[in-house]
Structure formats: structure tokens, C-alpha cells
Length: 62
Image (cartoon, rainbow, N blue to C red; front, side, top):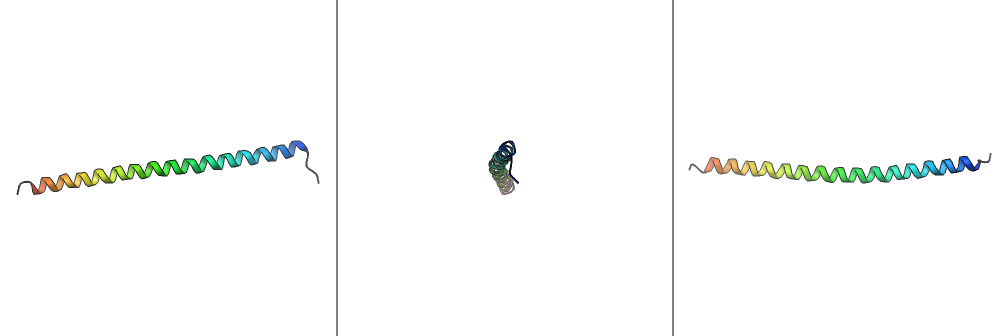
């Protein structure tokens, strides 16, 4: 069973679209994980800073 040229072009087009979608998905997941890591680092540093100010406030009356 031989494929017609239109069917072959359609299969190639589907492959190109699928590979492009895969590349975009991988790039998007990398960028989103990078942003979530940055926000968690900022959140963690702000929590540490708040704990530090709390400790300073607790120990300053002595």
C-alpha cells in the first residue's frame, strides 16, 4: 500500500508540529521551574529575614 504525496506531506507536517510542540513544552517547563525556584528562594529568604527580625526583637529588651 503506497502513500499518496499529500498523505506523506501531511504526516511530515504532523511530525514537525509535534516536535515543535515538544520543544516549546520543554522550554516552558524549564522556565516555569526556574521561576518557581526563584520565588521559593525569595520566599525562603524573606522568612529567614522575618525570623531574624523576630529574634532581634525578642533579644533586644535584654
